[in-house]
Image (tube, rainbow, N blue to C red; front, side, top):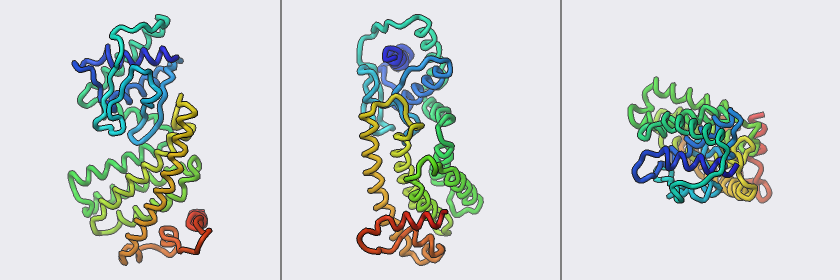
Amino acid sequence: MARTLRYACFLVLRELNLNEDKLLGGTRFNKVMSLLQHELKGSDLDLKLPHCWYLYGDESVPQELPREVHFEHYECPERTFVRWIGPDRPSFNLPSPATKRIRELAGEVVGRYPAMQGACEATDDVYEYAPFPFQRDFRSFRERFAFIERYTRLSSNPQRNIFLTTFETAVRDFPGEEFPRLRHHASRFEVLTRLLLEDDRDRLPEAQELASEFWRLFCKHLRIHPKGNENVSEGRLKWWTKDADSHTRIYAEWFSEVAARHLEDERLSSALDPLERLMLVPPDWGEGSEGASADLDEVITG
Protein backbone atom coordinates (compact mmCIF):
# COMPACT_ATOMS: atom_id res chain seq x y z
CA MET A 1 0.00 0.00 0.00
CA ALA A 2 3.00 2.33 0.38
CA ARG A 3 3.18 2.52 -3.43
CA THR A 4 -0.50 3.44 -3.60
CA LEU A 5 -0.04 6.30 -1.14
CA ARG A 6 3.10 7.47 -2.95
CA TYR A 7 1.21 7.54 -6.26
CA ALA A 8 -1.67 9.52 -4.75
CA CYS A 9 0.72 12.09 -3.26
CA PHE A 10 2.47 12.44 -6.61
CA LEU A 11 -0.81 13.06 -8.41
CA VAL A 12 -2.00 15.69 -5.95
CA LEU A 13 1.34 17.54 -5.74
CA ARG A 14 2.67 17.22 -9.30
CA GLU A 15 0.32 16.13 -12.05
CA LEU A 16 -2.87 17.74 -10.76
CA ASN A 17 -1.22 20.77 -9.20
CA LEU A 18 -1.56 23.69 -11.64
CA ASN A 19 0.66 26.08 -9.64
CA GLU A 20 3.78 26.92 -11.62
CA ASP A 21 6.05 26.50 -8.58
CA LYS A 22 4.31 23.23 -7.72
CA LEU A 23 3.78 24.37 -4.13
CA LEU A 24 0.47 23.45 -2.51
CA GLY A 25 -0.89 25.04 0.66
CA GLY A 26 -0.64 22.70 3.63
CA THR A 27 -4.30 22.97 4.59
CA ARG A 28 -5.51 22.20 1.07
CA PHE A 29 -3.08 19.27 0.72
CA ASN A 30 -4.14 17.76 4.05
CA LYS A 31 -7.84 18.08 3.32
CA VAL A 32 -7.59 16.79 -0.25
CA MET A 33 -5.61 13.76 0.97
CA SER A 34 -8.15 13.18 3.77
CA LEU A 35 -11.07 13.31 1.33
CA LEU A 36 -9.25 11.06 -1.13
CA GLN A 37 -8.52 8.51 1.61
CA HIS A 38 -12.10 8.71 2.89
CA GLU A 39 -13.73 8.30 -0.50
CA LEU A 40 -11.37 5.56 -1.71
CA LYS A 41 -12.01 3.51 1.42
CA GLY A 42 -15.67 3.61 0.48
CA SER A 43 -14.72 1.79 -2.72
CA ASP A 44 -12.47 -0.75 -0.95
CA LEU A 45 -9.20 0.87 -2.00
CA ASP A 46 -7.26 2.03 1.05
CA LEU A 47 -4.33 4.44 0.64
CA LYS A 48 -3.16 3.70 4.21
CA LEU A 49 -2.67 7.40 4.70
CA PRO A 50 -1.06 8.16 8.10
CA HIS A 51 -3.32 10.86 9.49
CA CYS A 52 -4.96 12.16 12.66
CA TRP A 53 -7.61 14.60 13.81
CA TYR A 54 -5.96 17.62 15.35
CA LEU A 55 -6.29 21.40 15.68
CA TYR A 56 -7.36 22.10 12.10
CA GLY A 57 -9.28 18.95 11.27
CA ASP A 58 -7.94 15.80 9.67
CA GLU A 59 -4.21 16.16 9.00
CA SER A 60 -1.58 13.98 7.37
CA VAL A 61 1.40 13.07 9.55
CA PRO A 62 4.30 14.67 7.63
CA GLN A 63 7.02 12.49 9.15
CA GLU A 64 5.28 9.31 8.02
CA LEU A 65 4.42 10.22 4.43
CA PRO A 66 6.55 9.10 1.46
CA ARG A 67 10.02 10.68 1.57
CA GLU A 68 9.33 12.72 -1.59
CA VAL A 69 6.58 14.70 0.18
CA HIS A 70 8.23 17.73 1.74
CA PHE A 71 6.47 20.06 4.22
CA GLU A 72 7.80 23.55 4.78
CA HIS A 73 6.90 25.19 8.12
CA TYR A 74 4.27 22.55 8.83
CA GLU A 75 3.90 23.70 12.47
CA CYS A 76 2.18 26.89 11.24
CA PRO A 77 -0.82 26.09 8.99
CA GLU A 78 -1.05 29.59 7.53
CA ARG A 79 2.53 29.36 6.27
CA THR A 80 2.76 25.67 5.44
CA PHE A 81 3.47 24.58 1.89
CA VAL A 82 3.95 21.12 0.49
CA ARG A 83 5.93 20.04 -2.55
CA TRP A 84 7.00 16.83 -4.28
CA ILE A 85 10.77 16.48 -4.22
CA GLY A 86 11.64 13.63 -6.54
CA PRO A 87 11.51 12.46 -10.15
CA ASP A 88 8.91 14.05 -12.40
CA ARG A 89 8.04 10.61 -13.80
CA PRO A 90 8.63 8.08 -11.03
CA SER A 91 7.80 4.40 -11.39
CA PHE A 92 5.06 3.07 -9.12
CA ASN A 93 4.48 -0.51 -10.36
CA LEU A 94 0.80 -0.48 -9.51
CA PRO A 95 -1.96 -2.52 -11.19
CA SER A 96 -3.77 -0.44 -13.78
CA PRO A 97 -7.26 -0.68 -12.20
CA ALA A 98 -5.87 0.88 -9.00
CA THR A 99 -4.01 3.66 -10.80
CA LYS A 100 -7.06 4.44 -12.90
CA ARG A 101 -9.36 4.68 -9.90
CA ILE A 102 -6.93 6.80 -7.88
CA ARG A 103 -6.26 9.11 -10.82
CA GLU A 104 -9.97 9.59 -11.54
CA LEU A 105 -10.92 10.31 -7.96
CA ALA A 106 -7.86 12.48 -7.26
CA GLY A 107 -8.70 14.59 -10.29
CA GLU A 108 -12.30 14.89 -9.14
CA VAL A 109 -11.36 15.85 -5.56
CA VAL A 110 -8.71 18.38 -6.59
CA GLY A 111 -11.09 19.95 -9.11
CA ARG A 112 -13.81 20.16 -6.50
CA TYR A 113 -11.77 22.59 -4.41
CA PRO A 114 -10.19 25.38 -6.52
CA ALA A 115 -7.05 26.94 -5.12
CA MET A 116 -8.43 30.23 -3.76
CA GLN A 117 -11.46 29.11 -1.76
CA GLY A 118 -10.75 25.39 -1.88
CA ALA A 119 -9.08 25.02 1.50
CA CYS A 120 -12.08 26.41 3.42
CA GLU A 121 -14.63 24.37 1.48
CA ALA A 122 -12.56 21.21 1.79
CA THR A 123 -12.21 21.74 5.54
CA ASP A 124 -16.00 22.04 5.86
CA ASP A 125 -16.49 18.77 4.00
CA VAL A 126 -13.81 16.96 6.00
CA TYR A 127 -15.48 17.91 9.27
CA GLU A 128 -18.67 16.22 8.07
CA TYR A 129 -17.10 12.84 8.87
CA ALA A 130 -15.27 13.88 12.05
CA PRO A 131 -15.51 11.05 14.60
CA PHE A 132 -17.29 13.17 17.24
CA PRO A 133 -20.11 15.72 16.74
CA PHE A 134 -18.39 17.80 19.42
CA GLN A 135 -15.65 18.66 16.92
CA ARG A 136 -18.12 20.28 14.54
CA ASP A 137 -20.01 22.01 17.34
CA PHE A 138 -16.91 23.42 19.01
CA ARG A 139 -15.57 24.58 15.66
CA SER A 140 -18.82 26.51 15.12
CA PHE A 141 -18.51 28.02 18.58
CA ARG A 142 -14.93 29.17 17.97
CA GLU A 143 -15.86 30.62 14.58
CA ARG A 144 -18.47 32.81 16.28
CA PHE A 145 -15.64 34.73 17.94
CA ALA A 146 -14.35 35.91 14.58
CA PHE A 147 -17.87 36.85 13.46
CA ILE A 148 -18.56 38.85 16.62
CA GLU A 149 -15.22 40.66 16.41
CA ARG A 150 -15.73 41.57 12.77
CA TYR A 151 -19.40 42.49 12.54
CA THR A 152 -20.95 43.24 15.90
CA ARG A 153 -20.48 43.27 19.66
CA LEU A 154 -21.44 40.61 22.13
CA SER A 155 -23.35 43.20 24.17
CA SER A 156 -26.24 43.11 21.68
CA ASN A 157 -28.86 40.74 23.08
CA PRO A 158 -29.61 38.78 19.85
CA GLN A 159 -25.92 38.09 19.28
CA ARG A 160 -25.41 37.15 22.92
CA ASN A 161 -28.24 34.64 22.70
CA ILE A 162 -26.90 33.12 19.47
CA PHE A 163 -23.42 32.92 20.93
CA LEU A 164 -24.62 31.26 24.13
CA THR A 165 -26.74 28.79 22.17
CA THR A 166 -23.71 27.78 20.10
CA PHE A 167 -21.68 27.40 23.28
CA GLU A 168 -24.37 25.31 25.01
CA THR A 169 -24.58 22.98 22.00
CA ALA A 170 -20.83 22.44 22.02
CA VAL A 171 -20.45 21.68 25.73
CA ARG A 172 -23.56 19.47 25.70
CA ASP A 173 -21.98 17.25 23.05
CA PHE A 174 -18.63 16.83 24.79
CA PRO A 175 -17.86 13.07 24.57
CA GLY A 176 -17.04 12.56 28.23
CA GLU A 177 -17.39 8.77 28.12
CA GLU A 178 -14.79 8.62 25.35
CA PHE A 179 -12.46 11.06 27.13
CA PRO A 180 -12.84 10.36 30.87
CA ARG A 181 -9.57 12.11 31.73
CA LEU A 182 -10.96 15.36 30.30
CA ARG A 183 -14.39 15.40 31.95
CA HIS A 184 -13.15 17.42 34.91
CA HIS A 185 -11.37 19.92 32.65
CA ALA A 186 -14.45 20.18 30.42
CA SER A 187 -16.67 20.96 33.41
CA ARG A 188 -14.34 23.67 34.69
CA PHE A 189 -14.06 25.16 31.20
CA GLU A 190 -17.85 25.18 30.85
CA VAL A 191 -18.44 26.96 34.17
CA LEU A 192 -15.82 29.67 33.69
CA THR A 193 -16.57 30.30 30.00
CA ARG A 194 -20.32 30.61 30.64
CA LEU A 195 -19.55 33.02 33.45
CA LEU A 196 -17.58 35.26 31.09
CA LEU A 197 -20.08 35.05 28.24
CA GLU A 198 -22.99 35.96 30.50
CA ASP A 199 -21.20 38.94 32.00
CA ASP A 200 -22.66 42.19 30.66
CA ARG A 201 -19.17 43.58 30.28
CA ASP A 202 -17.17 42.66 27.19
CA ARG A 203 -15.24 39.54 28.27
CA LEU A 204 -14.91 38.13 24.76
CA PRO A 205 -11.07 38.05 24.62
CA GLU A 206 -10.89 36.09 27.89
CA ALA A 207 -13.54 33.62 26.73
CA GLN A 208 -11.76 33.22 23.40
CA GLU A 209 -8.49 32.40 25.16
CA LEU A 210 -10.23 29.76 27.26
CA ALA A 211 -11.80 28.22 24.16
CA SER A 212 -8.50 28.12 22.27
CA GLU A 213 -6.62 26.52 25.13
CA PHE A 214 -9.32 23.95 25.86
CA TRP A 215 -9.49 23.03 22.17
CA ARG A 216 -5.72 22.46 22.14
CA LEU A 217 -6.00 20.24 25.20
CA PHE A 218 -8.82 18.24 23.65
CA CYS A 219 -6.93 17.80 20.37
CA LYS A 220 -3.83 16.51 22.18
CA HIS A 221 -6.02 13.68 23.48
CA LEU A 222 -8.10 13.34 20.31
CA ARG A 223 -5.15 12.37 18.13
CA ILE A 224 -4.26 9.44 20.43
CA HIS A 225 -7.86 8.21 20.69
CA PRO A 226 -8.53 5.06 18.61
CA LYS A 227 -11.02 7.06 16.52
CA GLY A 228 -8.62 9.97 16.13
CA ASN A 229 -5.90 8.44 13.99
CA GLU A 230 -5.17 5.83 11.36
CA ASN A 231 -1.99 4.18 10.09
CA VAL A 232 0.23 6.03 12.59
CA SER A 233 3.28 4.22 13.96
CA GLU A 234 3.34 2.97 17.54
CA GLY A 235 6.42 5.06 18.25
CA ARG A 236 4.69 8.26 17.26
CA LEU A 237 1.56 7.39 19.25
CA LYS A 238 3.73 6.84 22.34
CA TRP A 239 5.36 10.24 21.82
CA TRP A 240 1.95 11.88 21.37
CA THR A 241 0.72 10.20 24.56
CA LYS A 242 3.63 11.64 26.55
CA ASP A 243 2.94 15.02 24.98
CA ALA A 244 -0.76 14.82 25.97
CA ASP A 245 0.15 13.92 29.56
CA SER A 246 2.61 16.79 29.84
CA HIS A 247 0.26 19.29 28.25
CA THR A 248 -2.60 18.25 30.53
CA ARG A 249 -0.54 19.09 33.61
CA ILE A 250 0.50 22.45 32.14
CA TYR A 251 -3.08 23.25 31.15
CA ALA A 252 -4.45 22.40 34.61
CA GLU A 253 -1.99 24.76 36.29
CA TRP A 254 -2.68 27.51 33.77
CA PHE A 255 -6.46 27.17 34.11
CA SER A 256 -6.32 27.31 37.90
CA GLU A 257 -4.32 30.53 37.75
CA VAL A 258 -6.73 32.07 35.23
CA ALA A 259 -9.79 31.02 37.23
CA ALA A 260 -8.37 32.42 40.46
CA ARG A 261 -7.63 35.73 38.74
CA HIS A 262 -11.15 36.01 37.34
CA LEU A 263 -12.76 35.19 40.68
CA GLU A 264 -10.99 38.14 42.25
CA ASP A 265 -13.69 40.08 40.39
CA GLU A 266 -16.52 40.26 42.94
CA ARG A 267 -19.25 40.44 40.28
CA LEU A 268 -18.02 37.26 38.64
CA SER A 269 -17.45 35.44 41.89
CA SER A 270 -20.88 36.30 43.25
CA ALA A 271 -22.54 34.86 40.14
CA LEU A 272 -21.32 31.36 41.03
CA ASP A 273 -22.88 28.98 43.48
CA PRO A 274 -20.53 27.67 46.21
CA LEU A 275 -19.90 24.30 44.57
CA GLU A 276 -18.99 25.88 41.24
CA ARG A 277 -16.61 28.23 43.01
CA LEU A 278 -14.96 25.29 44.77
CA MET A 279 -14.64 23.42 41.48
CA LEU A 280 -12.89 26.35 39.82
CA VAL A 281 -10.62 27.23 42.73
CA PRO A 282 -10.54 24.41 45.30
CA PRO A 283 -9.01 25.17 48.69
CA ASP A 284 -5.47 24.11 49.40
CA TRP A 285 -5.85 21.20 51.78
CA GLY A 286 -2.15 20.51 51.94
CA GLU A 287 0.20 17.97 50.44
CA GLY A 288 -1.50 14.98 48.87
CA SER A 289 -4.75 16.79 48.10
CA GLU A 290 -3.97 17.47 44.44
CA GLY A 291 -6.94 15.38 43.29
CA ALA A 292 -9.44 17.19 45.48
CA SER A 293 -10.75 19.37 42.68
CA ALA A 294 -11.36 16.40 40.41
CA ASP A 295 -13.09 14.48 43.23
CA LEU A 296 -15.27 17.50 43.96
CA ASP A 297 -16.19 17.77 40.31
CA GLU A 298 -17.44 14.19 40.34
CA VAL A 299 -19.79 15.16 43.16
CA ILE A 300 -21.02 18.27 41.32
CA THR A 301 -21.50 16.71 37.92
CA GLY A 302 -22.61 13.28 39.12
